[in-house]
Amino acid sequence: MSNNPFLDIYPEVAEALRAGKPVVALESTIISHGMPYPQNVETALNVEKIIRESGAVPATIAIIGGRLKAGLSPEEIEYFGKKGREIAKVSRRDIAAICARGEDGATTVTTTMMIAHMAGIQFFATGGIGGVHRGAEKTMDISADLEELGNIPVTVVCAGAKAILDLGLTLEYLETRGVPVIGFGTEELPAFYSRHSGLQVDYRMDSAKEIAAAFHAQQAMGLKGGMLVTNPIPEEYAMDDAVINQAIDQAVAESVAQGIKGKEITPFLLARVAELTGGDSLDSNIQLVYNNARLASEIAKEYAKI
Ligand code: PSU
Ligand code: MN
Image (cartoon, rainbow, N blue to C red; front, side, top):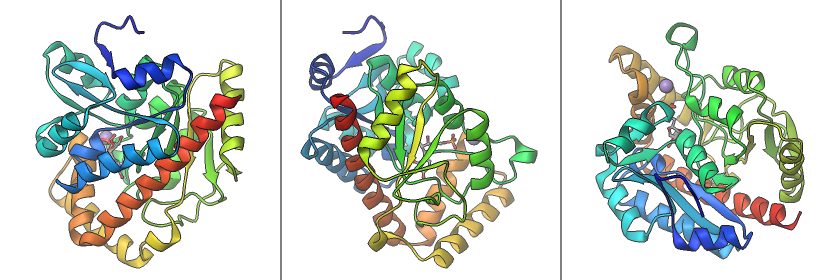
């Protein structure tokens, strides 16, 4: 199937790809760094189940013992969730060194897109993407996720991005990189826990079919880069804006005071916001991932019909 000497495609995934069936990629940093054990494992297994029930095949992506994995076994998912933050968070700059050393790696949106593309997968569901951090005009901290969205032809379905970031600057950067930002059933960019950011998406689309058609046009023209689909958290799981924004502001202030930098900053902020808001934000996080997995499956199914 693949002549990439570092890539292992899970048999169920390889078979689906050969048969032209819809496949949806999932990331592993959300498992190891985005949620606590054991909810991370439970969520990762459930999300695969939801994709199967929707009529697509899930491919959770990770690096194990220096091998790029497109599709994991349930035992491998358990292993990742248990090891949690002991596993290295791997971005584009890390991937070659980690593989050459034969180490494990948790894939971010960036590296999940890369490995999905190597395997021939075009759709990917996650929770939130990285973006331009608050204060980036000084720190230059801009997530590699935005670069990859500009490079790789994969449609990423997320719930927007967390307000730990500067969402306005994140949209500016995506525009520069030529990435269309689609709002599913909304004109307003959702902000992960909240359905509202006060910012506009580029295009509102109301069906999976419409999104699949846009991605198809992009592919047929041979355009570089992917698409970002932002899917608002279901109303019943959305958090109170004042509660979540207060927790985010506090977490950001602590990160500045403690001098947290580089790849540590996003996991620090995610964990701190989760602590400050108790179990509520974790519940919301889990539900929005399920919601995104359903939509990504529908888009992949519509695309397979074109
Ligand atoms: N934002 C979230 N949840 C996450 C992440 C971001 O709400 O789990 C993870 C994703 O793996 C994303 C990565 O690709 O963090 C971005 O890290 P950084 O900001 O260091 O690029
Ligand atoms: Mn960064």
